[in-house]
Length: 359
Ligand code: FES
Image (cartoon, rainbow, N blue to C red; front, side, top):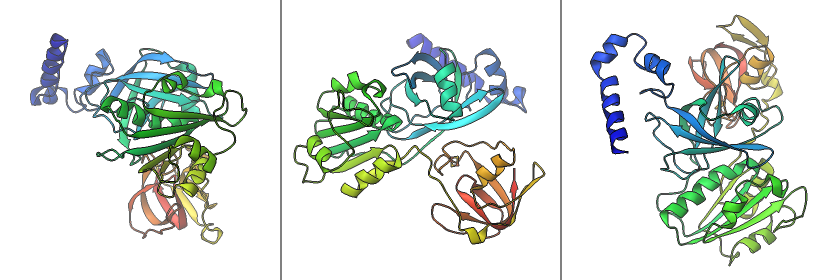
């Protein structure tokens, strides 16, 4: 172990030296070392898949060993994962399920209708596969001073950031009150069920939306589920974290207004009809379309272009493009930009009049 760390340290120092940088310019040392071993890169964070597990029929769990360029994540954050599919690099964001600070990153990826990257990984991930770890972000995280009474709620693949938080608390020896309600379609589709059942100090309840077999809870989230989860449910928990489909997030926030939340299902964005009808020029491709009011990402895709995208809801920034002319509306905040050139996230912006996008 010590010898391996020493060897890696010497290797990193040599590869990162100015002389090696000079000799390998202009492409840089990573373009050469990756020919030998794809994860031997100093600048690019990458990870090798070291285990592939299929916990449920509609998901795959990947254990990743990141290289030393990966700076880690906080429990609850997401990682932009890059995978090459048919020669094209695709990026999507996923929240790790592993505890923060662990050597390996665990991702559980659910199958979705039309989910290009998720379905590809469900079908084709294999030990030895190399994936890019593009960036880490998100503020769905616990404070450094952990709350004492915590309620976690998740639905479907929203379980992963909650697992990361729960596993992190376990590693830290958390001794406050923690309850977790997880909703899945049926028991066979509930990931991590055995581990959760054996997790000390956490009250875990399962609800199923397609059956009542083996369920702890009936129906949808509401006061009865709160009462079942918390010893004194009338006293609001110090913190509530919910991750899942929008309907679940809304239901939890109705009863727990201070809940921190994240949703993995991109919302449908629409711009006011009166601002559409201008000309959208994707200048690098020489393509022009008449603005139909949808986000620029959808308009580009409808025109046959394939810009990079990840979360498709304004979180990951992988769709950022340079607007060279015209105003756009942020479809989340409603704010309209000036006409100056600027970077915009095309998944959450729509034109206001004519715009030129460098795409
Ligand atoms: S695709 Fe993630 S911010 Fe646009």
